[in-house]
Image 1 (cartoon, rainbow, N blue to C red):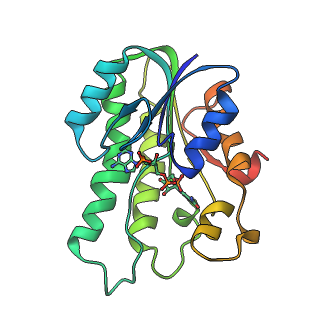
Image 2: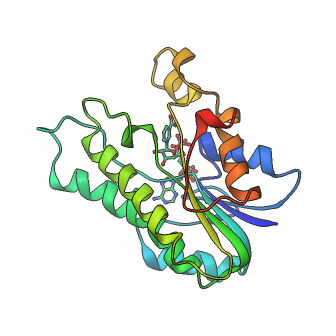
Length: 200
Ligand SMILES: NC(=O)c1ccc[n+]([C@@H]2O[C@H](COP(=O)([O-])OP(=O)(O)OC[C@H]3O[C@@H](n4cnc5c(N)ncnc54)[C@H](OP(=O)(O)O)[C@@H]3O)[C@@H](O)[C@H]2O)c1
């Protein structure tokens, strides 16, 4: 399969590339790195990416920005970051990508554990993650041509916790997180939220 991976240069994206590359033709996309670049927050940039890359069989998004911060510190623009980048950026990958994806193809987006298990400071991120999950469940009911759409919900990644100076032991190594993305692309599921803990 020809698989576009958005966020291919990131912590999760790199592990997904490593897992899928032996069996598939991978197009690596980053914001500044990768074979191609895209800005999720700009629909024109998404349109250009699909025009440049051409037809494909699957797209994985392991990207998306949203702001962590306490309820009384989050400003309008902090909420807007998550809404325009992580939420509508990934929604637009599906909306625009439908014009370029082959029959029987698949979309795999990324949310995160904070939609189901919030913590103080996660109001904006929890809202965005839940929005992505709601979109995927509903979009799957309408998408034609046997095209599937799922969302992977990672827990904290071990490498990310370590990079933040925290104990990584509570996290999952990125190479294990990648299994849920593989299942979404190579399996037959659609309209599902794939909790990474179920695929290791
Ligand atoms: N890591 C975790 O613990 C964790 C847990 C739960 C959910 N998640 C979610 O998983 C996703 C990936 O996380 P990560 O930790 O792997 O991220 P990361 O290491 O920070 O990597 C981010 C990736 O996204 C790209 N990117 C940055 N801004 C972009 C933009 N505006 N448009 C398109 N691409 C952009 C980066 O490209 P460049 O390298 O070229 O800048 C990079 O490839 C995010 O949605 C995150 O919320 C992560």
